[in-house]
Length: 363
Picture 1 (cartoon, rainbow, N blue to C red):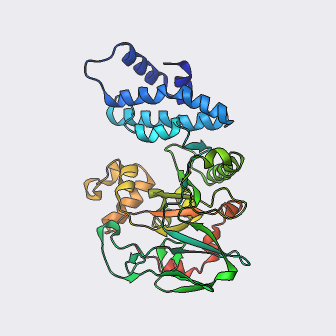
Picture 2: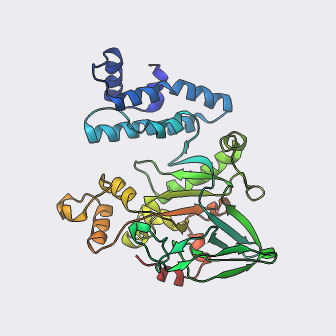
Picture 3: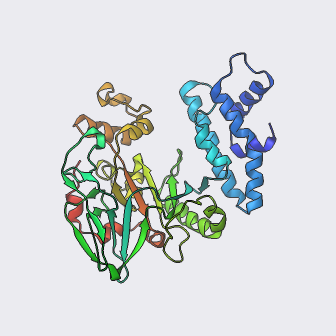
């Protein structure tokens, strides 16, 4: 194993020792997570060469590969052994397809979610519609979310010579049961399925503050502009052009962190609540498993199995109390348009829309 692999992976000394011992004295019964870690580490010299050839920053290389240590430590905490089970995920890092810039990671991709987002050329107002038919429940969530089906209302969307008509999606994370008509000449399509975009991911770890997130997202935008040619080669399937002057139409994330309900369950000043307020939240078909896995370490966590002494964070306590009252966690897809990154911290999409929309958002 080349020294650069250990240096850039940021593995702790005890993990390096375990890897070295495993290589020098392979066990009779191979341990697949350790094999996965060794496979990942072995790819690092080629990753470093790729970054150098493409002129990508050394700091981004180091930050990106530090995720290897995060996954290895999590596996060790869970099992007492060193290794990584998520080799497919880490292969994106070593292949130069995922980049960590500051606190947040990004992956260049085409927009996969079925949305059509328009911006008023004069006022800047942003409005999102579902671009394909969706059945919503009466609470504005997609029918089938958390396994709950209800024929509340069917979305519509059509573009004529003069108008854009559709079921509006509130930035608070739900669909609105009405049809909104926009004048086509006054609006620009700024985000749609097939446009190049940056998919965001938040790695585990400290420092998830509003200041760090703002700095990271703005740094991602600068990184994407500087290295647009390199990043665009990673998404040859883009079929829609982004707005003029923007290599990527949006930064978007679909994660348990994007559950609009967390904005009500957590204090306003909490890092998670502050993060999701900056995104235009879109209701999507989802369930509670991602939140259960990330917050409690169990996809099928039952809140009735723990007492207060076993809850170790305000987040765990808030979610448990909510679920004991019959609530169900889910998630949204959230996006930020690049021009609005300068307004990060001001909740720009919520300012654009009537506060009554927040009141119509149900659990």
